[in-house]
Image 1: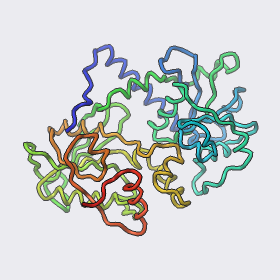
Image 2 (image 1 turned 180 degrees about the vertical axis):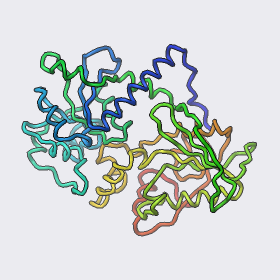
Image 3 (image 1 turned 135 degrees about the vertical axis):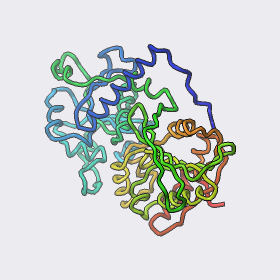
Image 4 (image 1 turned 30 degrees about the vertical axis):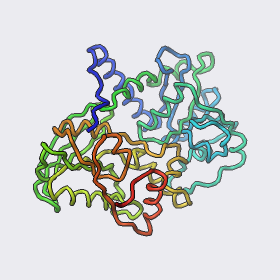
Amino acid sequence: MNDRHSPPPLAPEAALESDLAAVRVDRATTELKHGRAVRLSDADGSGPTGALVIAAVEALTATRFGWFAGLGVPMQLLLGGDRRHALGAESLAAGPMRLDLPPGATLDDVMRLAAVTPPGEAQAELPQRLRSGARPASADTPAMLSALQLAKRARLAPALLMVVEQPATLPRVAAAQLLGVSGADLRITQCAVIPKLRRISDAHVPLAAREDCELALFREENGGAEHLAIIVGQPDLSQPVPVRLHSSCLTGDLLGSLRCDCGDQLRRAVERLAVDGGVLLYLEQEGRSIGLANKLRAYRLQDAGLDTLDADHHLGFAADERDYGAAVAMLRELGISRIRLLTNNPKKIDALAVERLSLHAPVNPHNARYIETKQQRAGHLKED
């Protein structure tokens, strides 16, 4: 198993600062989820220069949008890079973008621009007044890039209502009431490729495929994400252990959705592991780590004709937002140093530098395009 990302131990002072930064980031993501604004300072946290007041568009209410409008400072919309194509701004260089909102823009306008329209409402074509009135520019400041990353950490769409802090015009009381976080806080909490995990609980849970199974729950110290290790049988740790990394998929794993092959892969993996023993790591990374809400938005876009990757791009996400540092940490805690990975995804193979065992699920009329897209555009390996 690849061990090249092991970070050196932190000095006590650095460890304390890392913990404090994690607290500020956790609190900021909670504020954004609840539709409240936060103050994000520039990358090094040095002060008000470059500070932004931001709020997640998808969580905004009319009251909070009115609070922003009442600040008397020009409002902008900050969007993930690939969202520019949906706005007809292909001439911009690749990367995030910000829009100057036209006078009189409403909360509904902002949600349409951000592709987070209310539930049940189709993604309609943008009105011309928004296309022409919202002037785009690149979002290339460290604080803006940090703002988009903060939204993704909260599993929110990378779309933020934003004003640039201007002490001469922004009411002092407004800034003082906001929770503060800096780009440096994000950088500190992201520098560890392999996160710190705690084994919280475990139990014997007999499965249909094999009765001698143990489930162990791990929780990340920063962010609180929870991942599950399913130890099937009695794997021989002196030999490479068969392992499956499986990202959570509520629709496929629990409901048996026909739109993907996740549920079939999960069940087939457990059956394969049941033969000689192995481990399945069930990772909290719904929708390639964009979250369930955004996955459902992407499904609506797929119904309108986009494939799974273009739908994610349309919302402002990369083709795959996952990382596998938590998987490495879990395997270490389980005492597993050599593995054989059940996967068709070359990124997983590269991330762990391991031997591959193929794992394919049945194709049906509902998931055929999904599987073809993964193979043709995301490089997933075809059946041997």
